[in-house]
Amino acid sequence: MDLEFYKYQGTGNDFIMVDNRSKTFPKNKTDIIAKLCNRNFGIGADGLILLEEDTDTDFKMVYYNSDGNESTMCGNGGRCIVAFAHKLELFETNTTFIAIDGLHHASIANNIVSLQMIDVEDVKVFDNYVFTNTGSPHHVQLVNNLSEYDVFSNGRKIRNEVYGTEGSNVNFVEQVNSNTFRVRTYERGVEDETLACGTGVTAVAIAMHATKKTTNTSITLPVEGGELKVSFEEKNSTYTNVFLTGPATFVFEGKINI
Image (cartoon, rainbow, N blue to C red; front, side, top):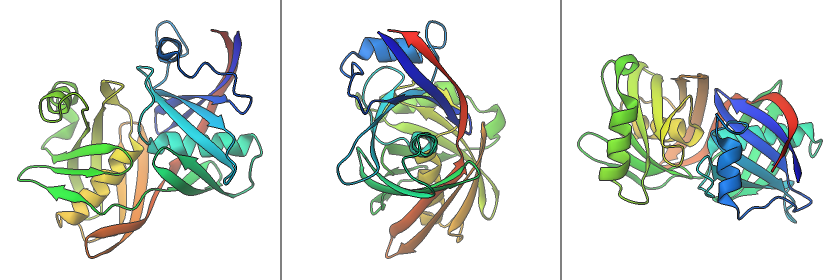
């Protein structure tokens, strides 16, 4: 069959978008999804996202990692599907949608998408790292000289040796100033460094606040593919009204035989 697809990117985190309201996409064929995401033999992407109908919200988001397996929440993917749904004229400015981690609110203006993330109550602080779940599991670790840091090797090691088969995303962080933290991320499922990770920078912002590296509740996070912002409210170590904000850009559309 010929598949009509759309390509979007959010700070370099790129995704194949498919309008699956007709329910024709072969969702259970992980080999097809992996091939579509392959940068040598397919379209190329960090993940594939299906937009489906939902009875209570504007749409449903179904996210697959580039290995073909359905995964946990993807923040930049969430922002990109909001831009895609806007292109499909499913809403004007504000929207709600359902994802694997629950209900999300979002808005779009001039290709900038602000996405509400889940509340975060459990932030585990260890001697040299923080672990939390912002829709996906994240290890957050401060390092020196981030630009020269071996994210791939060290991220892969932590992802496998510390977190076992299930794994975790791994974020390496360098503080720039009181409310700015540069981030590079090794993503499980992609099994490589990506240019950005939305749930990752969300985890970093919360981790830096929880460990008192900052007292700000609006954090700027430069990533390899651009810049993201995370804002939140905190009370009794619970983080609410968490918003991930940044650009979500249409790249191209096409058809491919699958």
